Length: 476
Ligand code: P53
Image (cartoon, rainbow, N blue to C red; front, side, top):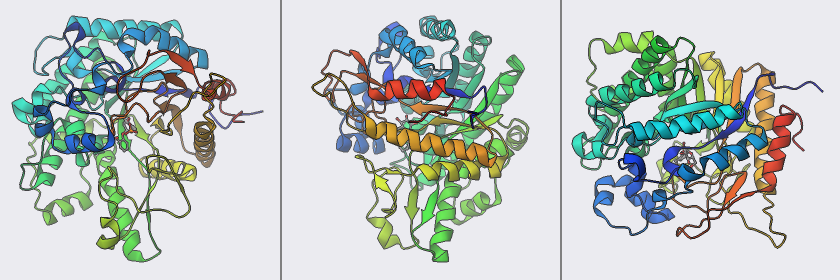
């Protein structure tokens, strides 16, 4: 049987340092943003939205401090990834592990040594690393020092970090992502930008200023990367997912377009190389005055990304009627209930065909290869009497999404690879829970931090192994 997927398609899984490593004070590591966040759906969101308050609060238990202790289990974990046949492993490098306060000149050798070992382990199994440079992991010290990415000096700190990584891993890493879900700065500015906007008279002004700094930083990182190794492939990363109109009323359609542009804005700059007119017009209307330096425009224009990566979990639905939307506030991405879709235990509306729509949309818009770097179902798992985890709900989600990814490729979309999110169970970014699991590999640990940390294969483990072995043809 011939496969829809290209022969060298990169199958694998994704994690992020801040959600799996633990060892939060080992080897000279500084504090990460998540290290001051509590667990549990309610307290967590409040803390995310009021970071300065969160810093002062003693929550007692912090899920990230130990997490799944990947820091001490990386060999075992990567071995399991290899057993599934991973061709690629997406991981992030903890910035405060390399620069504990973010503003040091010299990198922390012990931090770099940990990633030396991780990459050596990947190489052993012929697994290509895909590295997210900043995945919700701006050093916490920079919140206090300068309110994170609101300050332009972050560009220098970030580039210093990039330089340390590009030089050290010149010959072992080829694929890099500059910022995880760069549009998250508009939704969760603390995780996205290490900043607190609660005191600002116009929070959007601060958020877009910080976004500008990240966009310039991303372009300069792309420049630096290609200077250090012309073979490096640099990607941007968007939290994607189409917004559907609640009705065929053109007002709803227009509203949906506006919401999608909030995300496309970032990729428009990173891939096309300039600020789109719709954004400039919106800045005027919303009284947003960006401080842009003379050379910024040229930098953005010259150093665009090589490929477009994105996360896709669900689609959203919107209405032009503010009363209707008011009910859905509180979610990171507010959405009305779409009657045609199923909802996950955490309220995300799963939509496999939406994957095909999103891929076609992004490819039409940018004409650059895509990389799906996050996709998956967060769900509760139970160990049954036979000692196994029968996660057929997860298999169903992944099967449907992978099938539609194949269909998008048949539509003509260029796609480099697919790394499903949380290939091993880890801490949820949004809720801080351990119970919201995405993995093929179960980790024995609960929301309160109890458990042996033992790893166990779920049914989806063998299923995904078959998917990879058949290059995406055998999804049964
Ligand atoms: P969790 C919200 C909405 C969409 C994507 O999310 C998001 C978030 C943040 O919670 O983030 C990405 O863990 C992110 C990962 C995160 C994953 O989605 O809340 O890149 O760090 O874990 C899933 O279920």
